[in-house]
Amino acid sequence: MINILNKFKDCLIIIGLGCLCLAFFLPNTSNFSSSLFKEFFAVLGFLFILTVQFFFLKKIVVPSKLFILFILFIFLFIQYVFNLIINFQDLFFNLIYISIFFLSIIFGLNSKKYNNSVLIHWILFSLIFSALVSFLISLNQKIRIIESPYLFCVSYNGRATANLGQPNQLSTLTLMAFFSLFYLKKYYKINKLFFYTIIISLIFCNVLTQSRSAWLSVILISTFFITKFPDKKNVLSVFCLNLVFWLSTILIPFFFNYFYPIGNSYTTLDRMKLSSSRFDIWPQLFLATFDKPFLGYGAGQVGLAQIESISNASTRGEWFTYSHNIFLDFVIWYGWIVGSLVSFFIISLLIKISKSDLNRNKTYLFIIILVFFFHCLLEYPYSYFYFLIPIGIISGFLLKLKSDGVFVLKKIYLCIVIFLSWLLFALFTYQLIELDEKKESYSLQYLFKSSVKPIQSNLFILDGYSEKLDIEYLDYCYLIKNRDKEFFRRVAYRYPSTVSVSKYYSTQSDNLKNAENIVQAYQVISNRVYQPNIKKCNN
Image 1 (spheres, rainbow, N blue to C red):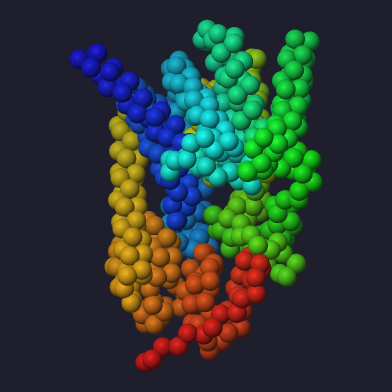
Image 2: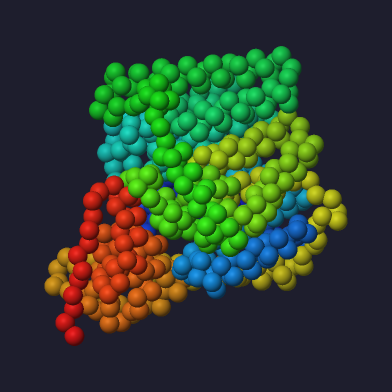
């Protein structure tokens, strides 16, 4: 019986790790979110390994500061009540992101307490495996050997993306895998040739992304490591790895531009000279925080902050869903008071981990967290479960809490947490399938019929995406009879497009001044002259 249980446990772990890897490999994108399916499998994989750990342990230790989580939840509900969070969908996603991150920390904390480091090792191996497969896919993007619907064959302006579809995400993954390998080297006999082959492959892959965030990370991490371990051997190792990285960064783009000119890469000098739209948007978004300093714009509402604070001098041709800086996002979402407290919590967590008697090997794990953190200052890997989950697990594994800093949770409560987690996941899956069916039905009717018939669905979790479909496909005259004007405004500001802005503008025909702001904002973010026509309906 015990053997059967152990085999079942191993099977669930393998399935879970497979799902985590699949999150990095899936080429599928969604009309609603480019990473929706990837994150779906990341959460599914985490639920499998979480269930295994929680089910086979009699007790679980939980940080005593868990009350912070509930205070933040209450604040989010207050934002929703005051209509700062536009859709329930945005509230749901934010609650889930925060919950998953805390659960992953608890997972790592208990893995350390019960000496279950092997599972942590396999999670790190899955990161390395995912990065190596992504390296092969990114090579294929450059030299175009295989054409397949399962591979992203088009690069991002000559920069490698693999199936992640975004070069900075691939860069984050390769750096995390790089230091995972150094950490695992102590516990497993890895052939030197094999080890350095993987190291060179990961460096090569990172170079192909031409990520300036990675360049900054390499400089900061190298400085941190030689400051912490200043002996000659470490300094020499860091110097050699940096030499390989920076020479590759300069030479590899020239190589591909010469031999494979079809998918031209930027030269390193070009990348250094190029400006970034995030530096242009930061001043605008920073000033926008003072318009709503106490409660913020609502969790996940950076796009709304951009639209409401837009002017002719604002960044043109780009609509931001994140500011590309984690601390600025917090202040925009939650206001200055709560945003500063959340930022302080993140920084204090980093400091607490750094002071937890890190030896050289555990420092590699801490550097993985630093890689993620540095990228959060210029990108937004914190918005993806497939990065957030490993970082939470590693953070929990490195945390050193005193006995009075934790409390023990009985197994009955663990069972409730697991049951509710799977129930929510099943409910979300059902709603996702229903939403996909609605999208397919609307699309087919739009192509082959004169009008689109509305579908009455109870998509309360994915209400934002559902409303977006309605305003895109359904006739304006039907909508104006069956929906209030707030519906049009809500969709236009949350999902600005030619259709949503035009239909909202038409609802304001008696007072166009109210709609001019969104029209002007849309002209800026779309970088084109646009003046919607007022739609008329027969009574």
